[in-house]
Image (tube, rainbow, N blue to C red):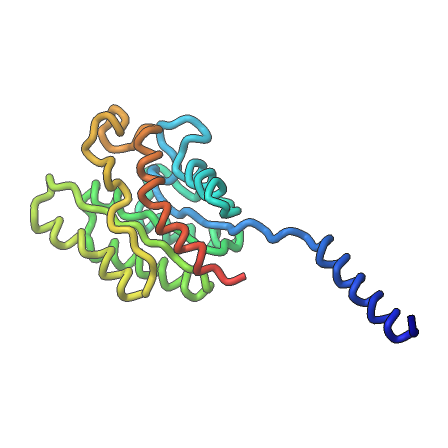
Length: 211
């Protein structure tokens, strides 16, 4: 074997060794910025939305780390105020679940929309792909309030070009078997349904992450 060929073989072996010993890719880090629905109000640790979603993603072959940035009782203004702090963890993607407490308090839909728009603007500037989850207003404030509140989410999703899941509590809302005694927060069975229904959208979100 001549010297040049021997050197080429050594180079190929070195490349193979480096490839075999390279560090595995880091998990996709997903920030879940939300309310008690994200935080896991009333359910045991490990059975909250982020924990169950992370487990389902891993079972699907997606190595993901969910960062639970849910705060019970938080409004869109609260989420906006703490967003920079949440971004300090450098997430690869984000799920935004905010506005339900605004509606429960009858806050002006225009202000909710302004806060959510500011959040989406900041995430876009940070190059963080987003899945926006929608909410429906409680009907006790009348049809005028619902007509002003409900369209906020699809309008923002279209404006910012982000993934959109129309109703975070789809398949769970108003079902006593899937909610806690307050009739608002999902129980563990309800959380599982929320996760199963949103899972395809989260997979699409992961597909938008640039490595």
